Structures are given as C-alpha cells and as structure tokens.
Length: 193
Image (tube, rainbow, N blue to C red; front, side, top):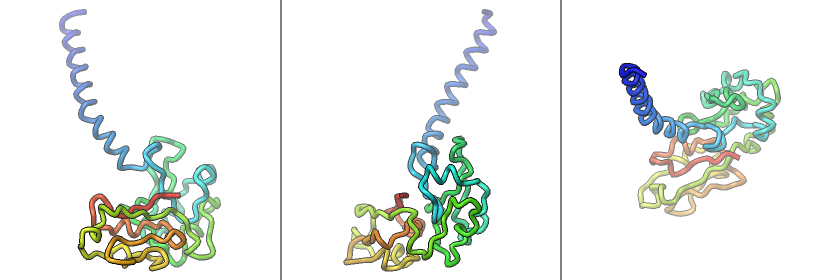
C-alpha cells in the first residue's frame, strides 16, 4: 500500500471516528426524546385498541390526524416500519382536548380507534405526579393542571396545599396537564396504558 493510500485511509478513519463521536450522543438524545421502540410506550389517540391489535388494524391513513381539532394527533416518524406513520399524541407539544365530537374515533375507517359512548370511557393513559417536581410541594401557588383538565375534578383535584391528586377512575390520560405543566422536567406526565 502506498503512503498516499495509507494517508487517505487514515484521514477517512479519522473523520469516521470524529463523526461517530459527535453524532452518537445526538442519536442517543433523540432516542430518549422521541417515541422509538424500546424507549417507552406511545400515547395513542382516544379509543385505540390494545397495541398489538392496533398495529395490525391501523391503516396509517392519517384520517384521525386530519380531523383532530387540537392538532394533537401526529404520524410517528420512525425507522421501525411496524410503528412508522401510526398516530400518536405527544402531550409535551399538544395534548388531546377530549373534543365534544370525538372526531378521531369517528374518522377511523378500520376500527383501530373504537368509538366510545362518552368521553369518560376514554382510557389513553393515567397521569402521574412527581411530588418533588411540583411547585406546590415547595409552597408556590399553581393550579394550571387542575384548571385546564378537560375532565375536571373527577380526574384531578387538590386535597390540600400540596400537589394535585389524580383520580384513577376519572383520568382519561389526555395529557393536557402534562402539556401545560410549567416545570422542567414536567411534574405531571401521562403514562400510557
């Protein structure tokens, strides 16, 4: 091998290693922030079938995305074809507002989103409060999560000066509390079912 070829190979290897060193942490950060397989369960739109059945039934047509009045439902961008383009809700950006017409469920042509009789029957997930992160635990006044909750006091309420109480039977997992929580990281998040 000539010294010119060796030098060219050394430069290529140097740039390859440098690029991997720079992009590796970026990739890890994105995997943690995005809904990718293995990172966490995704928050599906209201009325979604159980995950395996949902993936088998969803046509990835975007009908639910198009009719969502809150623009909360988005197609998932993923390299995993099993979940790519399936509808998800990312409550840090836009939560389900539990609209009066339950439009996403009505628009689904395959039954991947089943229409429920009443909004109270929706079960997307369950809100969980981090007492340590909630500003109310530190004596500050905040009621944003309770004030904004579309399900009202049947889902989220204050029982004293501390953090809110989540009522399992009333919380539908819409993510409104998470979207509007002013803390970083959020003191209240929705864990999908």
